[in-house]
Image (cartoon, rainbow, N blue to C red):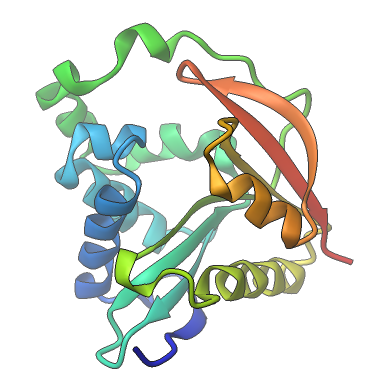
Length: 197
């Protein structure tokens, strides 16, 4: 398979087909995410809202047809994402229709980071047949460059704190340092940071 093209997209630049494919890939590649659990429609709401926002940065790995095979999605305002999503999209409707899919007992199990990690690389995923070709590292490096262009000093990322989670070694290999352990929705995470200077 030929190497995927990597590039950042400005707010409003993603096409409807790209947004729909990002939502589908999110659900396929990140099945345990809160949005995937609510469903594809809710995940589409998330991606449509984020694609219009100047707070989010999309870096895509695309195929020859310009459709995403992977993505990095970061936010300079991750702590307000859920509020912005509920008030600025049809997400409240999806939550009302799919409330039974939410892990209610886990929603209250939360131990935040000791500081507000901003900006945060929130989602990084690749289509299974496009993995292990270096595109994930290229997505992260392009995200770092996009954040430097915004004069950000550090990029943060959280990944599950599980012995079988390959992302722990992946981020360490890219120069990220563990800075805290947190809990979100009943799941333990390691918060990594990397200076962008």
